Length: 364
Image (tube, rainbow, N blue to C red; front, side, top):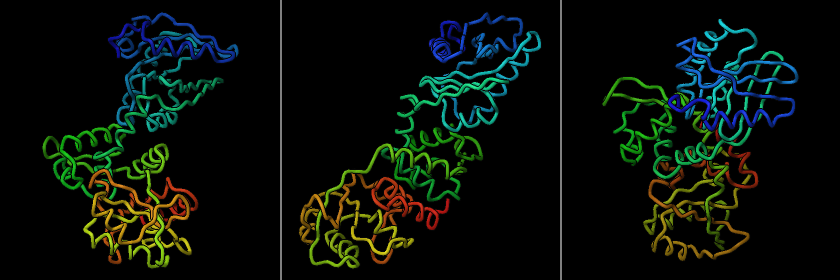
């Protein structure tokens, strides 16, 4: 963004307006002198600020986005430029990053290094001796859209493959084959994860391989997204004359008899892999829709209901939603990661069960 005329940078001007709206704060755009060539390449604006009678100079660098992968270099650059400025000027000088989007991980690093920031959503952090300004706002729409896209469709299949095989190293082609995604999609996902600094890499060019270094960070980000998205649409049924204990096996038998691809998830699946509840009265299953699925429901004697359902059906949009399912006790269960994510956005005691399941079955 350094090619933008500094004083005309709209985000910097918006930052100044935001400061002026805070009680007891005065802010003016100062002259960015060119005495220091090293500073001139890095700094985009100088602000003269007064907070409750205390004065300080804020030196600003403007960027498009800031991610953990590049934030350390950004911190080094602006601190170096600030030291060069301070050597020829008196008073308190603080560096600050202005960007359209700053990822949560990058914000944490900026906090830990006491380097200020401001983003297009209005989030503000400015620490200085005797002064502390902090405003936290929801992330900007551009960042929300980027994160949402990462966890959608075939991209989520790549993430699932990485989480379930987190100990392994993958080239793009190998990972694409495992995730049933195109090499282009796989490469895009890996590039995005590298920006968050969640991957380790080795090798160069076509032989380059990656490993998921931060599975916990990736899973936590996915949890936030599924909470935002809410529960998937379900069709609810009541199956008569079938006991609670026999329900999962009976559903599996009929679906397989009709050749329907499916995966049992939620409580019924979690209970088999990491028992937590005394009993489970409902089976939730993700399946491929079609005539065979409808015939299976008829075979089961399923009756559509709005309350009291003991079978909930989630129609898969693609076979990728059943990827990495596991065979257990003569039935197909969803992958542990999928079971956990489904539990997170369900109701009742599902969230308690989710934490138990994550500890006992996922382990990170």
